Image (tube, rainbow, N blue to C red):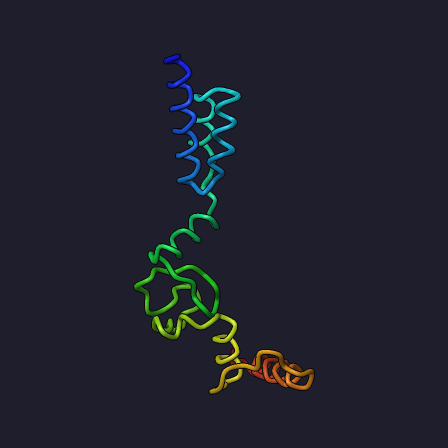
Length: 138
């Protein structure tokens, strides 16, 4: 009986290690349960962290934020993106979607973008974008 309790406890240890790295805790728990808790713990320790999952957790916790211009992850206190060099918007501006921020930057628009643009408006956005990209304004 005591062996089963220790076995399950070590399976939970493997699960928590894997979850901390952004991996499937349930998957490592069941692998440890079937194979061996020692194998599960070693596999969890050797497994590389899931960068996307860890970044997502840090963005949700407020430790990091996503640059609305280049979509890279930067520190929450940063005022300038270290990747694209642009000034990061304040918290109120950051609440807008990154797509809205891109259209404002590309087109110099003062009004919000059209939610369902007509074909002529889409062509106008595309033409303005191509013009600015061609002349080095992006």
